[in-house]
Image (cartoon, rainbow, N blue to C red; front, top):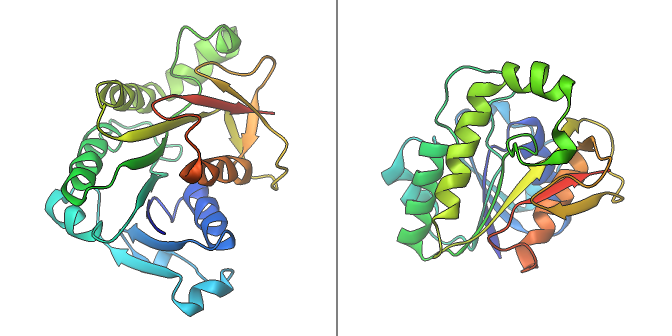
Length: 216
């Protein structure tokens, strides 16, 4: 099985890449700058397990060609700590869906944030409402647009993972998952554990067209 990965040079995307390699998947990784992707830690890649392609999410026709021969798409695209206006989730997401349809690919695993659902009582507190959400409002706005697009998408088996606060701590494998809303008392999740869950969804139908939230 071949996985098409977007966002491999980001902190979360690189953890996803490592997990995919560890689990034996062939990976086609689309990156803007191939020199920014270090494969030194991934010994298996020397055997051709990883194919790195230069390109971008806003090149729809090229994206369709890049997806040829792939079975699953994982998007770990993000904006880091940048809160400028973005369409990387919404317009980029539309391009991903169009490229998948052009290639007959049905499985998509993508990521947004556990803070964009204002109906979640687990994330309704002063710190998140007055400090975190305003500081990332432009990013959360575009993530919400992406989720709205997914809500109207019935021909793709998508899973939209909503992590809580992301850390760079090590993999534990001991995390909680709840559909739509944050597990009670949950506040954070490591990128390594997020990556583990995302890769697990390749062969799982449990969260198809659902939005699981991850936390410890």
